[in-house]
Length: 171
View 1 (cartoon, rainbow, N blue to C red):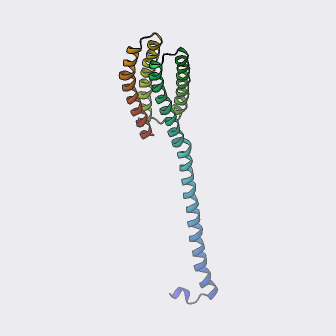
View 2 (spheres, rainbow, N blue to C red; view 1 turned 60 degrees about the vertical axis):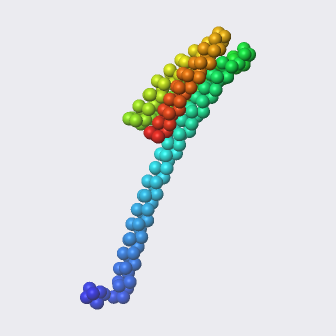
View 3 (cartoon, rainbow, N blue to C red; view 1 turned 180 degrees about the vertical axis):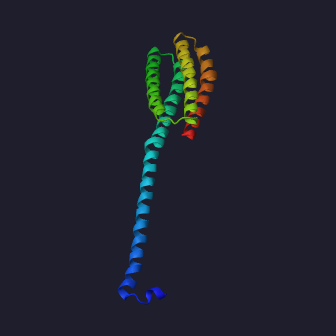
């Protein structure tokens, strides 16, 4: 250490302090940049992922309620109850369409979009069968409507639930 032999004590103390200060400042700036990155990622998760999961949950709940309405409509003998169930179904369909529009805006290209498009196709087929069940029930064809609920509505319901799960996983 011949370099430090002819250097004053003040410089010998000052050099390590300056080096240590430089290292601490560099570490601090690096840490702040890392924290900013984590904050950006958490905001992304909160704004997109959590919102999407909530929307898919709402779609699932509304859809399952529609399945129960189909069955309740068929077994109901009261016209007022049936009309009330139809009004509830119309409201649920509007809510699902609204939530789907919001959800669609947040989709990424690829698997998310493919899963969503498959869901929309299956949901449209479900609504067609659902409306047919309600019409048959209103026309007094309860046995045929019940058979349709037990076979097609239940089958399509299982497929749609699986598609919602696929959308959750892709998200």
